[in-house]
Image 1 (cartoon, rainbow, N blue to C red):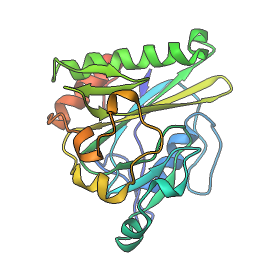
Image 2 (image 1 turned 120 degrees about the horizontal axis):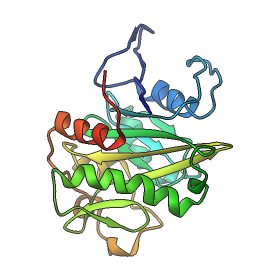
Image 3 (image 1 turned 135 degrees about the vertical axis):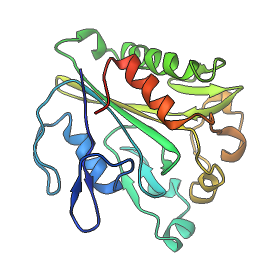
Image 4 (image 1 turned 120 degrees about the vertical axis):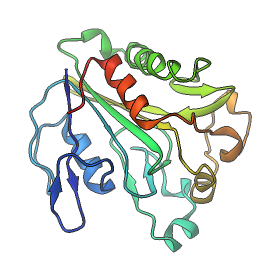
Length: 229
């Protein structure tokens, strides 16, 4: 498995292969291309191989799930502040991401790993590795719901997947230094909630794990057997 270096398409279209944060709209296109191998208006075709990547958006950004409705975001606030609102290729609820929210992507071959065609098996396989990495920093991490990671009942990581023929894209977020108050400001309460949430607001339900970003990145890469460039 290799480490995917996410391209940073800046506002003037120059490219830096080793940034820490990335332009949201282009990054989502690049991520989806990892399991399609085809060219888009902003992304060159990619070779379909297994790999892992870590990245962050360069600003707060609302990201709708594949089937999410725009009404899941607070229209007045994101419109007023010119916050980008984009759609990802995977399912799940709408999220707010940005600096302080580490995002990972893993691409897996279903020909090499046919057992992962089962959604439950795919969740178990990936979440075991993410759990092992985060428990090195926060020993009390628990898996809740289908694929949420929590500490003391508060969620700091949400995850989703997308199947494409013989490839699987599994990705997720890890809140480590994110302004939680922005989530309730830009997002409405989700219509569907896991039982363990117990109707809590975003501010009462979500939390950071207050981890060092570099250490967290190293542990994630170690558990996936990849080395960052």
